[in-house]
Amino acid sequence: MPDSRNELPLCPKKYIQTISLVKGPGYPLTLIRSKLELNETAELIFSEFADSYFLKLDDQDRWENRRVGMINAVSTMPFTSLEIFKEEIATWSADDVARAQSVEGFGG
Image 1 (tube, rainbow, N blue to C red):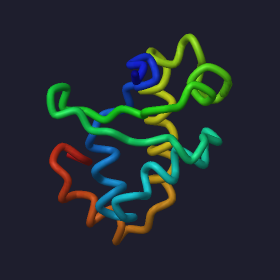
Image 2: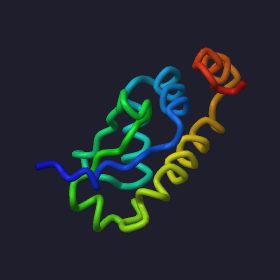
Image 3: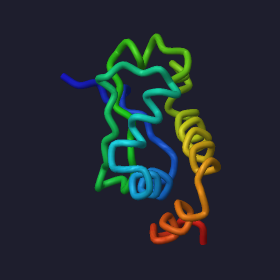
């Protein structure tokens, strides 16, 4: 049975949607896996009910990966993910930023 404690809330969805639009649909997960050194089993899941994204991790990443935050991860992951995505966006060209403007709530 899946453990809901392994599903961590992420930053506002507009950042994930914007990066998906500009860099491709799988890029947000690739980026967060790389920065947090996550196993390949990590997934991004969208909850229609919560209208937000969650990072689904295996037990090893959730409870042993210090980059995730272990016990504090539920409260820190939204901020950690926001910093990762903001760092990525800061590297974009003017054309990338112009495309990002089409995401509702982004940059406005």
